[in-house]
Length: 299
Image (tube, rainbow, N blue to C red; front, side, top):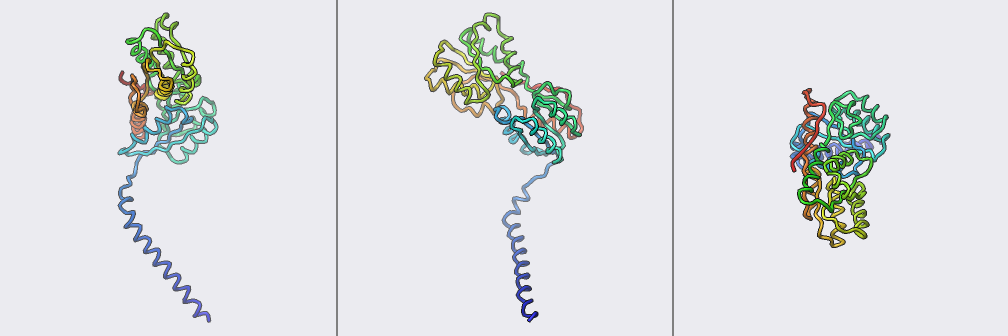
C-alpha cells in the first residue's frame, strides 16, 4: 500500500519541478530584454519635503524625475504632509535606506534640526535660511534677484494700477520675493500698489481674485510670485471677462510650461533640480562645493 501512495507524490513533485523550469524559461523570454535595459546607479539621493501642496515642491519632484534620467544616480522622495514629527521619521527612514546624500527642505522645528544633526552623510538644505548651519550646502533661489527683476519688468510698462499677489505668511521664499519687489518701488509706487492675499495655490488665488474683481477696477498689471498663483488670478479674470490686465510672474521653466494658455510675461529661474543633482553627485564623489548656492536665471 505504501509503494502505491508514493508514486502520485513523486509525480506531483516532478510536475512541480517542470512547471518551475518552464516558468523560468518564459520569464527570460518575456522579460529578459527588460531586465537587460535596467541600469544600475552609484549614488542614491534621499529627498525630504515638508509637503507637496506648495506648488514649488510638487514641481521640484517632477523636475527631479525628469533631470535624473541618464545619470548614474537615483532619488527616493518623501513628503511629510506639513507634520514636523513625520519629517523627522522620513529623515531617519531615508538614512536607514542607505542614501549617500540627503536633500531636505526643513519644517521650522528644533526636532527636525536635531534629526538633521544626527545624519552621518552630506546634507543639502533647501530654502530655509534658519537651517543654514546644519547642512553641508545651503541652496535657494535668489529671491532678491527674482523680486527685483519682476518689479523692473512691470515698471517698464506700468507706473500705476499694479496688483501684487501675496503668498502665505509662512512661506519664506514668497516673503523674500515680496520684500525685494517692494524695495524696488519708490515711495509713491508703493502707496499706489494694491496687495491681494492670494493663498498658496492656484485654486486659492482664483477664489481671492474673483472676490477682488467684484468690487475693484483699474488694475492694469498683476504680479505673481509663483506661476500657480498667477495662473489662478488669470483664470478668475477670464471668467469675469476682464481682458484689460497683463500678467507678470516668476518661476522655473517646468512650472511655467504647465501653463498652456494665456499671455504672460515671465522672469525665469534656472533649474534647481539640475543643481541639486549636480551638487549631490559632487558631494558623493568627495569634491569641494560652495557652502551657499543661490540660483538665478534670465529675465
